Figure 1: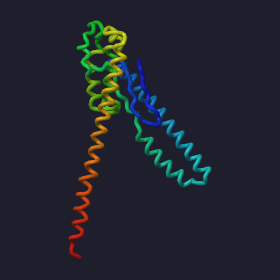
Figure 2 (figure 1 turned 45 degrees about the vertical axis):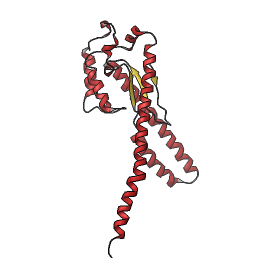
Figure 3 (figure 1 turned 60 degrees about the horizontal axis):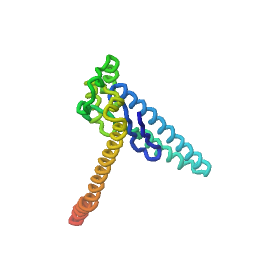
Figure 4 (figure 1 turned 180 degrees about the vertical axis):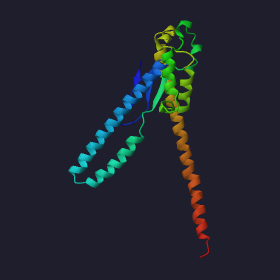
Length: 208
């Protein structure tokens, strides 16, 4: 299983490769909890260091303000995980794998999957695309396939697929960022000046 960890400084998304089965989803969840805890711990240590530095400089009030900011950032920072590798949405059936690689879910598999699909469990609502994640979890009910099954297509098949998926996700992310940038440019150049003209123009026409 290959893993790509997010860093504390960038808070970028982690990309996790796991088996196409409920156990693989459980591993995915474990990484989320473990790495999320690491991020929280590292940020708390950074905050403590900032507090100590400000206290030594006699800036206790600023340290308290910094605590408020840091606490807000820490509580809102959740580890975003992108599920790559072998997923039901990839139409695994079309990979022409031997039928022996497709297995029925056991009772434990179904129980574990229902746990993640539970509406009270926030795992299905987190990640790069929460709606897509829930669809993935639901589709996992059909069958389970281990990553090793792709070795039938060549020993380097999985590594090539992972690289192509990461590149595709980066491309989508760049496109979304570009769209957001264009939106803000449109807002700053057209919407804001028009609103300002309406507001100040209306005030200027008022009779005292």
